[in-house]
Length: 274
Image (cartoon, rainbow, N blue to C red; front, side, top):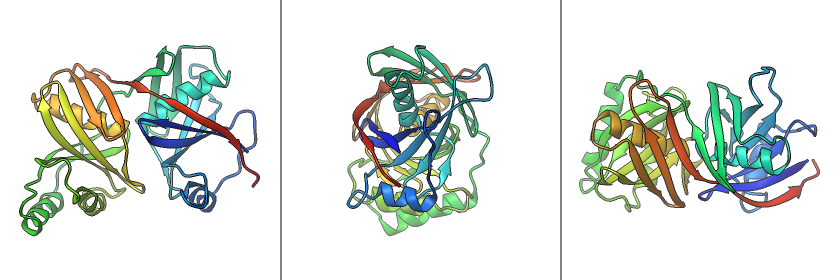
């Protein structure tokens, strides 16, 4: 199998062309390949497939490092768009793809800078007693953290965003591992940690379900900004500072789609014999 290693602000992937080659994979194989010591090493595996819908260009599938298939990945979407153009699978600048939870539109702005229409944020998920209790227990255990719930939202995948005063705390990974498995999230959730700098700028760390903390999370950045805009705390365009770099998120609010703008980087191409 031929693959490309790519990353979006340090959130890294291997991408497989499932149109021009036969793809062989299983959860066990994905786990093996994702190992950073004995395999290729990646946060997610992405697959490009043909679409059965003539109005769509491709189908986009995403697998976490543990082999579980998931529904959305914002950084991966930018890498997906860059990959299909770089490999000559399309000449379009505007690319329409389907995912497990809906369709998204990717726009190649210039070189490796890509805008992704992430659709409309979904705020229908209710905050439960279990989640509130878990946050209280964390604050009781780690009294100097003083975390509080910022909000929960789906950007095609579930996100819980926590507001923190110390974004550099080493406890963030531990808190993320506790909250991702909360009963409020039957399929687990990505846990974002936000520190608001100004109305137009935030810092963010994200503990991704099935993966752990990553250098960047595109859908996590969208989630944090969407909640902030809904609460009227953030402006309609926000600069998001992540561990691996920066993203721009734009949302008018209400029934409009949310847009993410950022880079995608090709690292190398490889071949692996299964």
